[in-house]
Length: 297
Image (tube, rainbow, N blue to C red; front, side, top):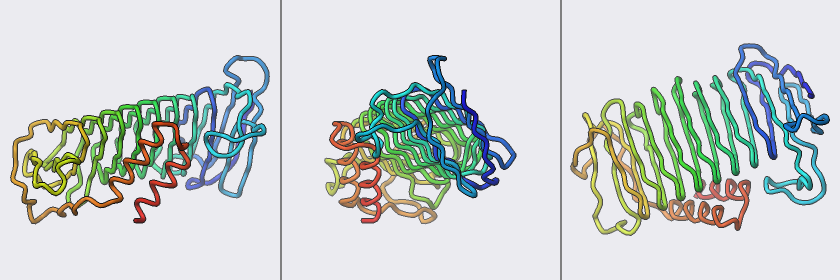
């Protein structure tokens, strides 16, 4: 077992990478981050690299020569390491994992997760969260206002939050479930290739549905529940949408809402990036870089 302790302040940052094993993170109200690394086999000490800064800490398995799926060095014989982490509640977290399940609880700061072949569970969370998953399910339960940007491939996504401040989701071959109150006057979006969408809103919501093949043809059907004050745009190649308590509504948006703009080339480009990721043509880091380029237009 290896234990690392480092004071990063209440708003410091932790970068943690892992290949094979698990990661469990829990929030604390102190200014120190504690990382405990154990060999999952119970034999020998895990070999890890540690980089300390004035208000930051970086931890990852020791690298070997070659090229990594995460960008960097290839783990010739990847160690199977389990990480237990105690992190200040408002600290920033950046996590990259391959073949590792991840659970984080109680965090409220800026969070970034990139996982391949592992499930992701975020509990009692909130704040700004960015996640990219491949071949793994993701489950997010937020008891604080949540702003979420998610890109998923071959995995389901389940989100529950008292207040969804912003939702931007792109998915390939995975279903999406959204539960909670949607903030009005914000452009919430879900874009999928073949995944379905289930929405159970708290309060009024209008879901603007449009299949990609219908763009520009005036087709599509709005679904409305309550006063329809908040707006969610759903675009899909072949996926379906179900809105709990929903009823057919008019195409015209209420004046209190921000009308959704017409689809852009960037929307299609983003889905193409996710397809390339699913086919294995690019890695997670390259996919993330290209998705950022599509957002900048």
